[in-house]
Length: 395
Ligand code: NAD
View 1: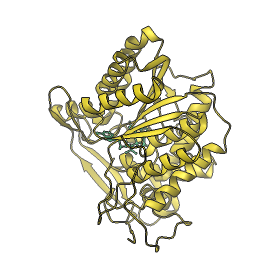
View 2 (view 1 turned 180 degrees about the vertical axis):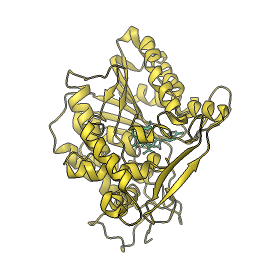
View 3 (view 1 turned 90 degrees about the vertical axis):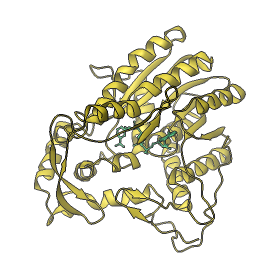
């Protein structure tokens, strides 16, 4: 089949198998060209198929030489429909891991469920015995609670008052004003249930009870703070409440892991283009301005550069450089005063006549399509490709 991008807003419904493999290989190459890390050896990544989770898995495997188990929720191909990007990414990851003699297995299913937790525990017991790192990198619009069966939906809304801001449509590159009404109390509660810390704590509890966590295990989850201009829609909105909950869960998990000397951390990662961030209104304009400034200053990072730096320079460096709230700060470059001052200036200046110059909107658009394996110069998109790709180590 000749695969072309088919998109609606921030969703691309097709993915290119060869392009996704190319993207994963490039990330692997990046890590292999850096210094080896003396770090984790047996790693579980929950949310391992795209974005920060995939980059964490690649860094663990090719930076530390770790055996990895990846959990994700992705769609395999049918005869007529491509698989999701995360499916192709995981197939590529496993293929490359095998080429390099690294253990890699994956479980495709709902990580919020007890069934997938149990399946993961069984696989760890069978193949690895225990794990010494657990990365929790889920981003999901909904969650079925494993005990009550209740279905929760997350929303991205401000709290308390209506939010008005400029935003950009990265396909048409047109700026407009968007208005988002505040969330109800129930919407806040539901967003916390999906993106807060309860499921992370449930995972760590189940893994600990099953005795599959190594002494001194490290577990990580990812959060975001961001600048003042996005606070109303992000950090002080519904998703921010969920992130407050996730960050507070560190204390609970640390208590639970005390007996084995385990430690939980939240890392504040930088804003990047992923399927999850593309769904957040207004963020595309901010990221476009941020990319422009960070690229000009030669400090631009995507997921893989961030995650390699997090492993090498923080987690396994002997100095986590935690902030006053005990968080790892991988957003340090993004949040530099000069960077933010320039981003704010560009944000204020951006309009329909100058958006292509004041921001890196073209870079944003390209990154978006690259998430689905498109827009790589070295990939032949006119070639007929086999869309039915299997993941070798799927359990
Ligand atoms: P992403 O959309 O690229 O990845 C989400 C992952 O979760 C995928 O592997 C997907 O398969 C998996 N997943 C979703 N629902 C699942 C389910 N029910 N069961 C199993 N797997 C499921 O997202 P991302 O942007 O990499 O986000 C990961 C984390 O990083 C989130 O906590 C996010 O808030 C955080 N973060 C993101 C950014 C950013 O700019 N993207 C910045 C800072 C922090």
